[in-house]
Image 1: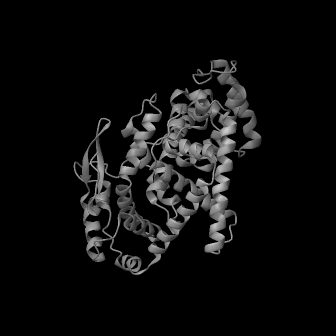
Image 2: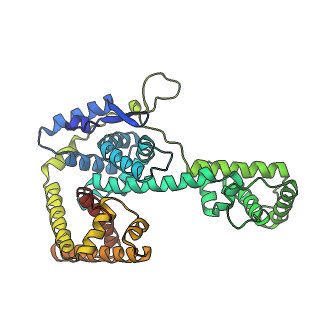
Length: 406
């Protein structure tokens, strides 16, 4: 993959894949025009990509119109292309037994870029790319876990594995009205109460209930409906019951395993043009002038550097096994279990050591913030600091050479 160096390209081009390999960078004309206008307005050639990422993220947060937000999100999606690609490549290498490739993981993560934008707090002064790298990896792993679970489950096994909370969320996401949801949930509860697998394990391929079981489930539903549903609710037949449960499984799969639609997808019914072409070209010169005129960015950068120095000094004070453990966990993204097996230790021992090390680093951050920024670390601030610490560790050890496990 050819890295981008020009700001215009960094904020207006997207990776294009052929099979599982990068083919080229595709330029988006609307984003290119938008970025060109802002570069001309800035009248400064020395503004960094980090400056522009913070600018677009701040603009994304303050904009109220959906179309305006899509322009900012488009620029940020372009900016995060390389970060997502390298995270996808690392994930594909780590989970080599999966049927998903680099391009699959890339699309999975980029389709959820809004989660990155919502979770990132630019006021902390940390790097959006570092935050995105850690969050992309988490999103890829979680999606892989869900897809594996969903892929291997039959419809009936999935119904048994679902929680009521997830089922209700899935039905609401599918636009089902509340009164209908109540009926569907009661049908699902009756199904789980009557259709209990005989085997203790291996229920992923649970077969469809037999005729007698269907009758028993319908009977259970019709008995319970008189007390749990509105008085005018009709009795249910076996055919209606099966149709309801199949609707529940379809809604659950769609909710847990959503289709990914790229921002560059052609609009339905048109041979040319993309969703992004519908976005308005919003100019926000005032915000740009405000950000250029202020020293806020430099202040954050200085604080970020000082925080990094505090963390580095704290790490250097740790014993060598602790330093090695941090590098193993964050540099190569080994799981706790993998590290435990290689070091011939218990997994819970690794977990406790990592928790203790994070607490030591977090205490150093909180102490520095209280002494230099006069911030009293309450629960919300400690939570933000903990998130920032994970970003810093991911970025710091991501730049370090891998430490081999013997």
